Amino acid sequence: MTGTAVIIPAKDEADRIGATVAAALKLSGVDLVVVVDDGSGDRTGQVARAAGARVARHSHNRGKAAAMESGAEIVRLLDAEGEEPRHLLFLDADLGETAHMAAPLIEPVQAGEADMTIAVFATRVKLGGHGFVVRLARDGIERATGWTPAQPLNGQRCLTRAAFEAARPLARGFGVETGLTIDLIRKGFRILEVEVEMAHRATGTDWRAQIHRARQFRDVGRALLARRALLP
Image 1 (spheres, helix red, strand yellow):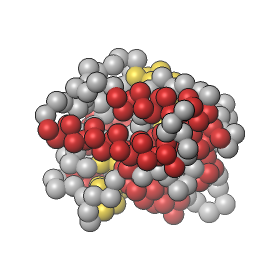
Image 2 (cartoon, rainbow, N blue to C red; image 1 turned 180 degrees about the horizontal axis):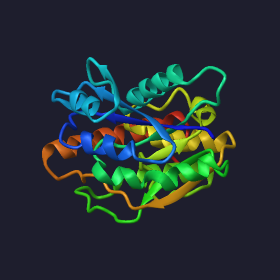
Image 3 (cartoon, rainbow, N blue to C red; image 1 turned 30 degrees about the vertical axis):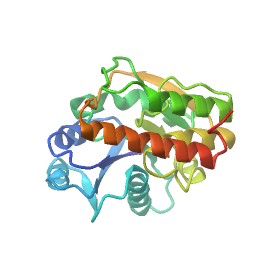
Image 4 (spheres, rainbow, N blue to C red; image 1 turned 135 degrees about the vertical axis):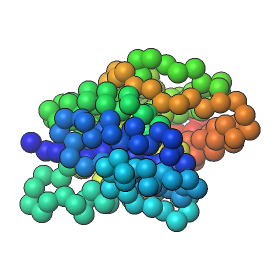
């Protein structure tokens, strides 16, 4: 049976990364957790390593897509020669103990029923924003592929190595989920949304949160523009 590696991009998540790693290691079939410390200014890397993860560090913040690429490359190097490459399960660093609920994302990929699964959180956390970025991503994906995702920006995704390689190079920064979805559907890969009982920390309404959303909006827009899916 093909194993699964968990990849967790993380920046300044020392308060939650330990619980996230510990929960991910309990998932059936998971034999490797890789945390990519994307230029953190706190002890994210040290906490993740103490919890049992292999840790790679970017000397400066390079963005979510770059962290995902780095994590996938580490897994590729660690995959045993001659064996089926591990499936890749990407999780957010702030899931905490709810990361252990990711099993339903792995199962359809393991069974060969999907090439990529996308989480749909059954319990929605109240967000501080107004949904502009979500609508931009959802509408863009629908225009590009004809499919309307429930949670287009959800970063909890499991996919085969073949699907991951087919989507490279990944869209930059926070446009990575939007780009992944469009590129894989256009190339004929099977995508399945799966409801899970997971939750991450909601972004707030302070100026840092607003800057975060502005960056998301910019990156999603760039991903759509590159795929000619920004305008009707």
